[in-house]
Image 1: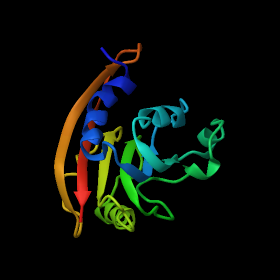
Image 2: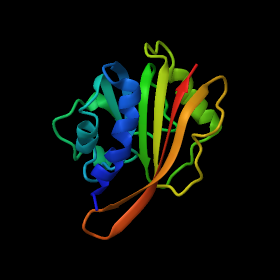
Image 3: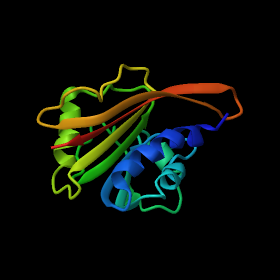
Length: 175
């Protein structure tokens, strides 16, 4: 059985390649796993893409302080679903979150509104790795945004401390 990183990538990478093969992404938003610290796996996970910026959201400032060799402006100590300042021109969001505040329809619409400002590719791919145990929310209608290619897949892995499983949801939003 694959480890968590490889098990996610087995689904994640082919899905993204369908939309981003050969494209230059503007901004990528990621979150999750900084206790490892997760900044490094997220950089590795996205090596196959060409992008201008990657921003990592983390809820705990103590985790951010553990990270070395990164642009501190790319680390944001906020909830990815409820940031103080929404990032514009976003092509990809990968939210691997732990229990906390559930995303709301209004919050997702604000993320999409900002993400589509000057979005050169005209799409925003949103993937949610459910560490919260909530119902799927990416298969819903959000304001004026259309969606296609929604999927929901249970990912199983074994990192040596027993088998784990979590649901990975993905969708492509466009205007």
